[in-house]
Amino acid sequence: MIAKRNNPLLFAAILAVSIAAPLLFPDYRTQLALLWLMVIFAMTWDIMGGQMGYNSFGNILFFGIGMYACAVLQRDSGLSYFSALALGVVLAGALGIVTAIFFGAGILGLRGHYFAIGSLGLAIAAGEIAGGIDYIGAGSGMTTPLFPGRSEAGGLFFYFFFFVLATITFFTLRKLYEGRFGLAINAIRDDEDKAEAMGIRTTRFKTTAWAVSAFFLGMAGAGAGNLFKFIDPLDVAFAGSTYGVWMILMAILGGKGTLWGPVIGAVIFHITQELFWTYLLGWQRVALGLLIVIIVVFFPQGILGWMRERWPERFGQKIDEATRTSGGAA
Image 1 (cartoon, rainbow, N blue to C red):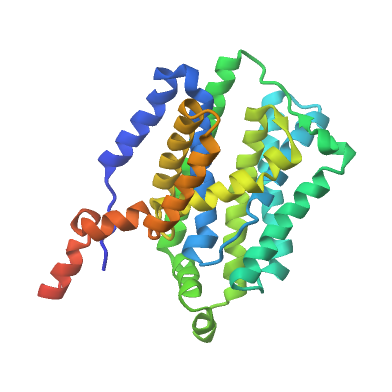
Image 2: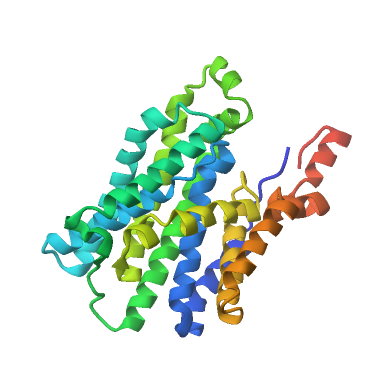
């Protein structure tokens, strides 16, 4: 049995650094906000791809729906900026859940690469459909309401927006993974047929897992639309070739199927990507492609898995040894 650590010093350190970062580096608030957005991407994808074994290429669908839903509500409701944003975030999360349940009823009956391709088709179709609807700007995109204040204040506001959302996502998932929900989706990942034979209602858990992912991605999309100030249907809202792929890579890089792995992967990936864009202008996409190859070839279990193999005692696995030798648990 692997021990589960609750290290208050670790959380306190992360909290202190997170609060200080936008104040110490005011010129990088947008990049820091995007870092938390990447963390949300990786964690929400890992619910399906890592914890449940359903590799979704279409999770960007919920991000785009949330982005448009919040922006349209802000534009048409007549409410003040913050009232409309708050209502739009709730609406975006709710629409994500409804969409996941609606499409999940059909597509979650597929398995393996059939599900992956089906989910990819959903994301691509959503981008094309959004590009043909004049009400949301069609292919020309749409602008979102401007933050009522100085741009510096807006950057700080959305930094903490994504930081709080990522924190809520993390602790919600930790709670879910420690309970029956986590055991059920892990059983589906290990052997879905046996899980069904054991009485686990797999369809219900698969749909719930996708809905949880959609809920947080929808809210992230609502905030991202305001952060970017402009929504393009293919390059921003339903950007499957960038955000859609990155959320998978970040989870794999850190260690999919773990709680901390996607967080670690997102932080490393985002920092690396920003360095590429800063110092390798013109070659950044080549470098990013090489990074993807390195991730897949050398870190199939992710950085967290690689570290666990080499320093198991630092991850509580020394308790396994104690259990074997003494029959007890620390």
